[in-house]
Structure formats: structure tokens, C-alpha cells
Length: 256
Length: 110
Image (cartoon, rainbow over the protein chains, first blue to last red):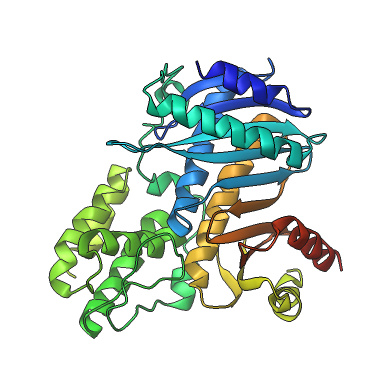
């Protein structure tokens, strides 16, 4: 049921393939040029979900992400289903350099509407393949893969610049990117800074983003207090996939 | 190091549609930021995002990643890779992003 919709995208000049990816990075449906076999698409699906998860941290209402490459484009369209169990799928369109983005824009909107209807009415996630089939052995977890996303980057930002947290209750929703989390007092601020530095050893400069997200999850709109520390540490530790990194983080924060 | 931080500060930040910008190196270290944003956190996210999309491009044979546009109802963001630095620019979502992309290309070519 989803494939005919993807086929309509394939008919736009320059489009070489289209696929729908679910939050666990599984390819739900695809229509692509034969050079893009399922193995390649599964590999791409993982990176698509990683990039969508990253962008979600700073712009939770993103609609379209367009990546311009030297020899083509990759367009990602967010598909958020409504209903009792909302999920975020991503429609990925692979195009060569002949693509007319304006033409695709129209087709993309039509396709997105139809896909959402199909996904919301329970049509088929006939999940083509689970991400676990990929050679790297990813778990395909829907949560932000902290270590995987950030390990390649050395931890420089936090060591160089230090950290700051808003000194009063200004906690706000996620996705703003420029929103600070509120702290009750200087001891709480110091705790968050130490916590971020400890986390940075595992995940690099994304640590501050994860700590802010963690504070928002633990505290909601109210300012962070020292008493929230254990819950925050547990939340952050749970997000570290690598067991050695998790143990290091727990050791480093045991005395906080 | 290129002169991207300087171009960002003296030219791009002055475009009327720009609300904020951040420049990092390709490891996520903050080089320049402007506007009411948490530059170091956003810069890190930009780098992680471009790394993930770069992997997509490699797998699909699309060549090197040049820039990324992210649009939504409240804001639009353009991330450009320039030499070994990453520029993230936030613009008013009500303005056409295509026009701004051309202006940015011109500024970065100088």
C-alpha cells in the first residue's frame, strides 16, 4: 500500500529512490533504483534516524531536511502520525543533480499526506527489515544513541569553554536549542556542570544537550534542584549504550 | 583555518533574515556565535547531524556533503560546510530559504 505512493515520487525527474523509515531505523517500504539495494538502504536508514534524532534536539517541529551533496540530494520529510500512539516516521528521497526541488516539493507534500493516512490507518508497516540485520550490529533503538552519535568527536567544547546554566526558573520545552534549563541555586548549577563534564567523556560535546534534555525530562518546567540529581544521573546513565562508558560515567558521578 | 568566523560575524550575521548563527570546527568546538542561542550546544548538534548525513551521502554515492537546510513552522536553519568548519545559520521561517541560500553562497565564495 505504501509502495505505490513511493512510486509516484520515483516518477519525478531526478528521483532515484524513496523509502519510509520508522523510528527504530527499519525500512518500512521502499522504491529505488537497483543500485540502491536493501542493504544500502538499511545502512542509510540508520544514519537518517541518527540525523533526525539530532535535529529533533534543537528543532522538534522540523518538517523537511534537505542535504545537498556534490552529486545529488537527500530530502527527509518528517511524518508524525497522530492518534493514541504517535510515532515519527521519515520519508527519505534520494535524488541526483538533475532534480528540480520545486517540482519534488509538490510531489512530496502529496506523498506525505497519503503516507500519513496510510500509516495512521494501520496500513502495513510491513517492515521490510529490522536494523539489526546491519553488519555493525546496531540495536536499532529508537532513543538517541548517545555514544554512537557522538563518539567520533573529541571532547573539546566543554573543556575549553566551561558551562553555564540559567540561574532562575526558565525551563522551557525542548526543541528550541537556545533555551536554558532553570536551576534553583549555585550548587545545582555546579552539579549540572560536573555531570556534563563526566558525560562528555563518553559522548563528547553533545553532553550538554543530553543533560539539558535530561533535566527537562526529570524536572519538567520547574527548576533543577540538587535533590533531582540521582534521577538525572540514572536517566543519563540509561541513555549510554556502551556498558564500559556507562560504568565510567557512574564512577565519575558517584561522588557528586 | 579559514576566515569563516570572520565572514560570519561581519557579513552573514548582518543579513536581515538571520536571527542567529554559530560556527564550529568539524569536531564541534565553538569558533563564533551570534544571537540568542546556546552556540556550543547547537554547534555540536550541527556537527553530529552533518556527520550522519555525510554517512548517508557516502553510502548512496552522492559525493561530499555541502549544506543542509532544515525547515519547520517556527524557524529555518541552514548548515553549510566550508573547508573544515561548519556554519549554522538560523533564519526567519517566514522568509524564503532559497533566496537566503543564494545570498549565503555569494558571501561564502568571497
